[in-house]
Image 1 (cartoon, rainbow, N blue to C red):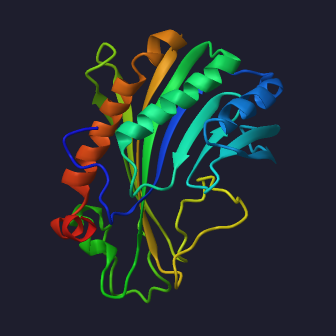
Image 2: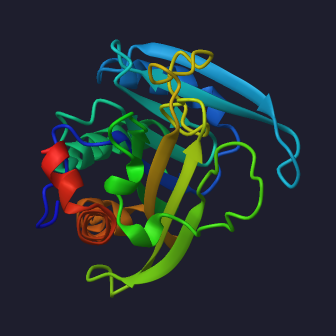
Length: 268
């Protein structure tokens, strides 16, 4: 969506997510049969209802509904105040098509439910880098993101796990130059987990891991806009432009600030 190449053919991108949050629909469960019928015609025939118990400050029970493609390469996660579109087949997917598909999904959803107002829209890239015997993650990410060096005079135990987080505001060109919230998080999992644990991928009970359970470095980039409950129609016509702007920042950081020249060569 910007000047840089979005998807590296052999790159680490394992999930793309777009999410909108809307004013709560307390009786959304009564719309689910109609929503399911609409979305199954759009390529999401598999269906799963998820129930759980919240933790403070979100106490009480919650419900989510998943609409899933036959090959599990993408899904839609819905609750009473947000809808998230997740794509896992990222090697052959373009952000332009991704945005258009999301707009079609929102159209189908809005046709049934009639969204009143939009509170938030966000775009997220999740990159997963498994450690290899002859290739360290430190060769792929620039030195600024390697974490601090601890004193060698201490008898440390176990593998150190890096955690890096930064948040910045970004002035956007559309929608009266509103400010988006950009988050970069780098974190690691010691036992080969392919996706962060907050990613809902079907089947839910089967966690995907890399062969050999290596150390995995996640590079998680999120850019989102918070609204003061603007009318749905005021936002909907600009969703593609908004996503283009959100993506532009993510691309700029990923390609120019995060990854090394060696990474670009390897992932082409």
